[in-house]
Amino acid sequence: MKRRYKIIVGMTTGLILLWCAIGIAAAYAFAHVARGGTIAEVADIAGTPVEQLTLRTSDGVGISAWHVKNNPDRVVIFAHGIGSNRKQGNRSAVMYQDWGYSLLMVDARGHGMSDPAPCTVGWNERLDLAAAYAFAQNAGYKTIAAHGISM
Image (tube, rainbow, N blue to C red; front, side, top):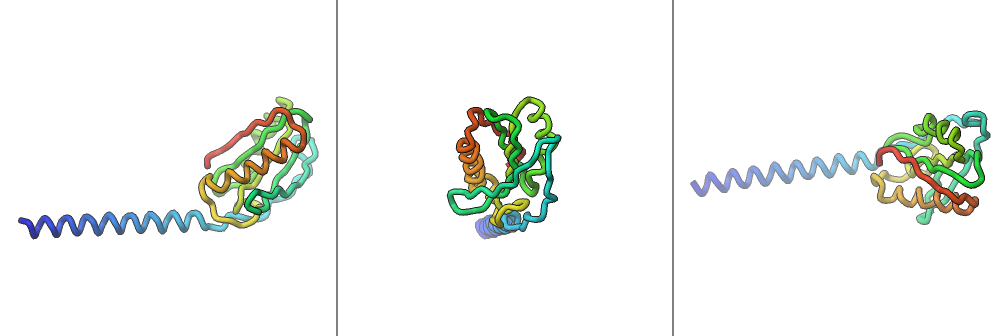
């Protein structure tokens, strides 16, 4: 009976370790998939001109962004989901423009036109949003809102 118990425990432990190893490998592969790519430049969003920006994060990553000046006092920062880019917020952007907000639509690191970097599901991406927030503060916006999807 003891021998049978040891075999069952050993096999179960081996399967759990295998399952963990597969999970870690899958997570690593997911985080290191190249998600960059070209995004068609746009001249305007809902008739308001778009300013192309590159923001620099505190760890030196270049973040690509669109800035649409609609209101000198209020801005909303758009954060897209994993595997997407700043264009994911286009539909909502028009709504915020109608409400009187300027727009700051950013590509997270390793996404869209931003510098390549592994996806950390929000950990390092917080630095991207901090750079966007700092830009909004330096631009003189008094009200800074955020609209995020996923991540």
